[in-house]
Figure 1 (tube, rainbow, N blue to C red):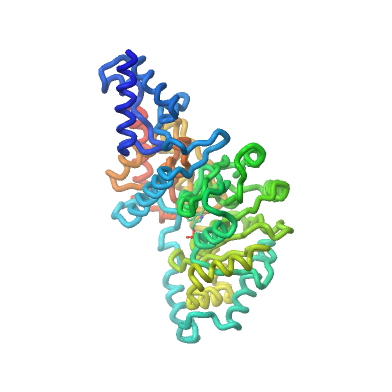
Figure 2 (cartoon, rainbow, N blue to C red):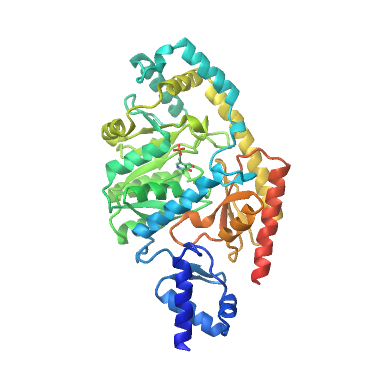
Length: 474
Ligand SMILES: Cc1ncc(COP(=O)(O)O)c(C=O)c1O
C-alpha cells in the first residue's frame, strides 16, 4: 500500500513539474486519480496527503487539490513569491496572456484596457496633426520651458479638482504608470527586499517585482473594502521587514475594489507608525462612474512619503503611454532615475495632452468614456449572473473596466479558459493574480469592449462551459 501511493504521488509530481498542471491549477479529483491508477479512492487520497505534507499540492475544502507554487515559494506568515522558479512562472503566465492579445481570438475579454473604438481616435488624430503643424518645435526632444510650465500648471489644476494639491516642481512624466512604479521600486528597494502587495494582484506588478528580484508579500484585498488594513498591520508586526507597499485604491485590478476614504486615512497612519512608504497606483482613478472622482490617498499625505503614480493610458489613449508621478520627498531621486532610465517622454504627445487639458476636451472625452463603461459594466454583470452557474458571485465595481467573477469553489477557471479559447473567447483566469492557488475559481472579465451580439453570445457560452465543467466533476 505504502509503495503504491508514493509511486502515484511521484508520478503526479512529475506531471506537475513538466508543466501539465501549472501552479494554482486544479488537479484530478481523488476519484479520477484512483481511476487513472486503478486503485481505490483511499490510496489516491493517501497520495494527495503525501504531496500535501511536502507542500507540493494544496487542499481546498470542498474544492479539491491544486498544484502548489514551486518549493521555497512559501513563508510561514504570508505568501512570499520570489524563488527563481516562481518568478519564471509569473513571466510565463504573463507572456501567454500577451500572446492572446496578439492572436486572432474573436472575443477578447482578457485585457485591462478599453476597446480602441471607445477612445476618440479621429479627434486625437486631428489634434496631433494640428499640434505638430502649429508648434513644429515639438519635434525636438525636450519640451520648451514655457510649454513645460504650462503643462505642469494644467496638471496641477486637474489634480486639484480631485483635492490633490501638487507642488509645481513635483510632476514627472514617464512611460506609462509601469515606468513610474518601476522607478519608485528601484529607488526604495534592493534585490531580496520584500514589498507588500494586494492579493489578488495585477500580475504585471508581480512581473516588475520579479524583474527587480523583489519578494511579494500578499495582503488580502476584497471587492467591497479593498486592501485589508488588519491583515497589513498583522504582517507588518509579525512578518519579514517590508520596504514599501504598492496599492491600487481605486477600482483595483482585478477586484474593482474602491478603498473608502476612511481606510485611506487609516492606511496613512498605519504606514507612518511602521515607517512604510506607499506607492499609490491610481491608473484607474479617472474611470469613476459616480459624480465625483475618488480622492487619491496622496491628498492626505502630510509627510511627502507617498509616491503617487497615475496614467492617461486607460483614460485617454493607451498607445500614448503617458504616465506620471509625484514623488513627495522622493521626487528628486526619482527624477534622476527617470533620466537614466528613458530620459524624457514624447514632447509631441505632451504637447497634445496640454492642448486637450487646456481646451476641456480631456474632460469631455473622459465623460463619454465613463458613460460607456458604466453602461457596459451593468450589461456585462447582468449577462454573467444570468449565464453562470448558481453560486457565482460578483460585486459591481464603481469604476474601471474590470469585472471580478467568483465562480463556485469547484470551478477551475484555467481549464475553463482552455475550453473557451477553443471557441475563440478569452478572459484572465484567477490563477494569474496570486502566487498562491487561492483564486483558481475566479475569472476577470473586461467590460471595456463594445457590447454586441458576439459579446453576449460569448458570455452565455462561458456560463454554459462553466456549468458543463461542474457537471462532469460531480
Ligand atoms: C493596476 C495596474 N497598474 C498598472 C498598469 C499599467 O499601466 P500603464 O499602461 O499606464 O503602464 C495596469 C494595466 O493594466 C494596471 O491594471
